[in-house]
Amino acid sequence: MNVVTNFKWIEAANYDEMSKIAATIFIDQLKKNSETVLGLATGGTPEGFYKELVAAYKAGEVSFAQAKSFNLDEYVGIDPANESSYHYYMDHHLFNHVDMKRDNINLPAGIQSNLEKAAAEYEAMIKEAGNIDIQLLGIGGNGHIGFNEPGTPFDVGTHIIELAQSTREANKVYFDSIEDVPTHAITMGIKTILSSKKIVLLIASASKQEAFDRLRSRIVTEDFPASALHNHPDVTVIYTDMK
Ligand code: F6R
Image (cartoon, helix red, strand yellow):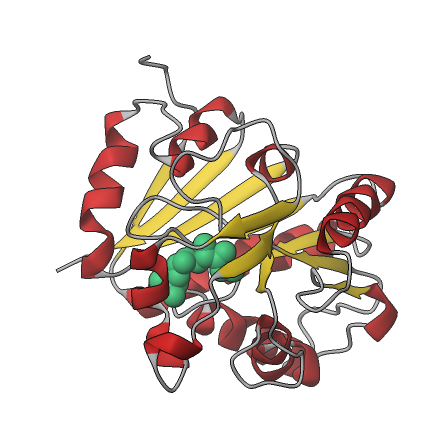
């Protein structure tokens, strides 16, 4: 199916500029509404973005004191204290350095006796918060958003997913070995992501060229999860040279 995309495409001169443009969008949103519900992502791509947010906070340009956040995903079976967990990543890159209230920070729980229940509760909490005002996304080489791997139906909320082998390979740099990379994750669903009011997608590495081209093609298919974003009215893609 070909659709007319509503995407706003912004080409940044380099990685730093991509990070700055994205941070400015989030800072402006927080200035407009201090109680913004932030949707946050982890991974290599947004590290520069978080640096920019921390710098802006330290310069007194923005406060997170009234904001709430929900992260996209977490590995199943990884303790929040583990350095490879997304809980740890977020503390390290953002939360330890800004005035966000701990009670307002939410990440899906990767260690729970009943993961399905935890997923449903996370979904309900996002709804209860009035849905996400602005969601940051990266993209997997296979087109995943959050950890919604190819084939994930577009109409499911937060759920447990088996990670694609290519995703485990891509993320093994954060673990001692491939065997240590979890096989499953808990992730917001595509339905959850599409319920965000505004979406900002960052693309910045050579390994994403194919995904970038597929996104540009505007073909919407469950085989390429990021293509679901063409059904959203307010997506900004900030990308930089992928060579
Ligand atoms: C992270 C997430 C993933 C990553 C994607 C790209 O919370 O949900 O979809 O955004 O795997 O990761 P990087 O940026 O490491 O290439």
